[in-house]
Amino acid sequence: MSDQEGRRPKLSRQRVIEAALELADRDGIEALTIRALADRLGTRPMSIYHYVDGKDAVLDGLVEHVFAEMEAPAADLDWREAIRRRCHSARAVLVRHPWSVPLLESRRSPGPELLRHHEAMLAALARGGLPLPLMAHAYAVLDSFVYGFAIEEASLPAQGGEGMAEVAQEIAAAFQSGEYPHLVRLTSEHVMRPGYSFGASFEVGLEMLLAGFAAAASSPEWANPPEVAVPG
Image: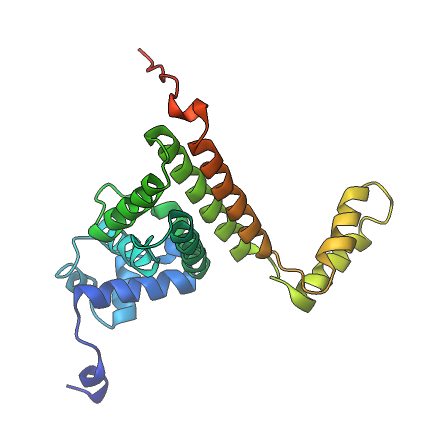
């Protein structure tokens, strides 16, 4: 056995999932195959099947890993603070792993981390006094906001500072004809100002959502929500 083989980490399911995470982060989820995973681990494709049943099992493991990185809402916190922390944590995780967003709710074999996370979110919304229909809407809206913001944030050419200012200047220069006055104003009077950060909109949007859910929870409209017609 060579020195390189001796130093190679022993294969395990955890090591397979960690290697898959590294591949997805580096090359995107489309590049993740059993063969690519075997090459990454310095082994043969058939060896991978001793630890996972196939690519679907690898994807399930990745989803579990991503949810495990997120901070689930803590039961001992005010419901808005618990959800606030969870959403900030989820945003950071999804920016690190932008390939994961389409996978998170697509798996047919949800694991314990995913289920634990969903249960904690629903428990926090219930502590806020949201009736069941509003809880369902709030959870869907929150995740749509967080997931969508993370995708957009990860794809931006710059996140702020000099890099964003340079991009904004290029955009503004293209609009000097006067055809797009609101875009020019937004760019020159907001985006190009010192300290601008696209990410600041996340905090603003999240607080607006939480305030809206709290207000709706005490609204008579949601105290007795109308029956939803089931297509027949």
